[in-house]
Length: 157
Image (cartoon, rainbow, N blue to C red):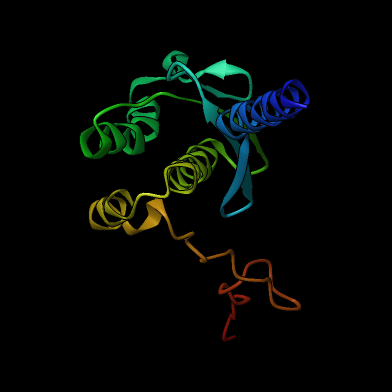
């Protein structure tokens, strides 16, 4: 009887350990938008590597790399470490809006996986657009005109 109870307890403990391992290896996917660029960031525990469209962000030019680095450096300063692997897929938009959408998705993913209120406040204090998307969009063209605000030229003859 005791050996049966011991086996049941061991089985229960084994299930709990597997559940904890699954909880540690969770993937969280978060999105970010800027103009017509849409970024989806998948974050999980790892070594601190970041890929944007399967390219390490270290390969980007200096200023784009700095923009991607901002949420990472703030996270290192607030939490003390950065042990997350982040994969970002970005579609649409131009090069700058792609970087800004990626930056937004990375910051949101870091806040979601850490559940850290001080990190969220630090992002808000540094730059509001790290957590909140910029909702400005291109104005629609008016009928009969070539651009949103441009009017046809008049010649008074």
